[in-house]
Length: 306
Image (cartoon, rainbow, N blue to C red; front, side, top):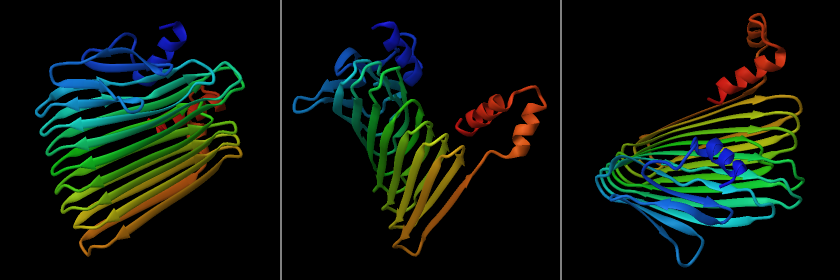
């Protein structure tokens, strides 16, 4: 792994070296490093590009890292990763993709992650997307995350687009079919220049006492465009909350569309949406502490997207 690839790995997975536990590191279209454990197996698919991650029932306090690194200009791939989490687990999964494109051809990673979370299991999922490079070729990412939660299962997602992605369509869809299952999604996007980002967060609450909390935060700088669609369907006695907050700067464009649908009289659904600029008093307060206007803006944005 060269210095560029090591830098990308640190950006998307906070790794300076190979992690402890199970991992699969994908570099320029191929698995470059893999490790399994007694409780977590990683198997390459035979019919298409991707892997199956199988976590045995009762696995607790263990992690899986599956970052993707692309440093080859013109490389475009579609990868399928399926996660099978057994009953009564408590695990952390760290994904993410980094693209460095210094050439003239577009580089693209499309990833489809499917999660099957069994009864009473807890999953924390962290996914970061990052792009860099001096070439004229674009850096493109289109992640799709599909989730099935069984009875009593809980999943927390922390998904973010840090910087440098020219165009992206981000789709997250969850089906809560198990009684008492729940999900929390925190999605963060930063765009600048002429970048375009579209995000869809969709949850179906299909069983008694299911719940969801969807929080989307975005910052659109310069002439970038963001579109965020949040949808909650309450088809049983359930609780759902959606919140979409965005900061618009320069000539940016933000479109936020929350949608609620209830088919059960005991479905309690709430949505909030707000778009605005950075408050002048916030800037002034930080500038009186010695920061420049640009430094103050960056500090506010960093705190907003934290």
